[in-house]
Length: 95
Image (cartoon, rainbow, N blue to C red; front, side):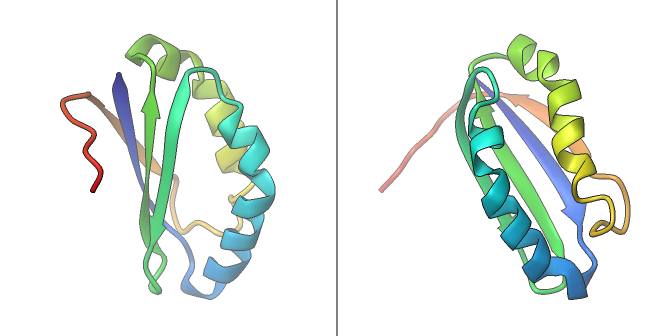
């Protein structure tokens, strides 16, 4: 498993609109190849991150164009392009 973590900064006055748009995009996001889990967290100031748990780094990398297309739908909401990094999976615990 592989974790892709993407930090972003939304314009604070666009957060609610971005959340509504995200809800509409759920089918497209969840249909990305190899995606096991999608977590999106955002603060009132617009700072946030996405954690995507994907089958492998190779599959995550292969999704790059599709993910860029999804992010492009938030271009007017963002103060800067999102910054992604990846990590080898170590644990996935739930209470």
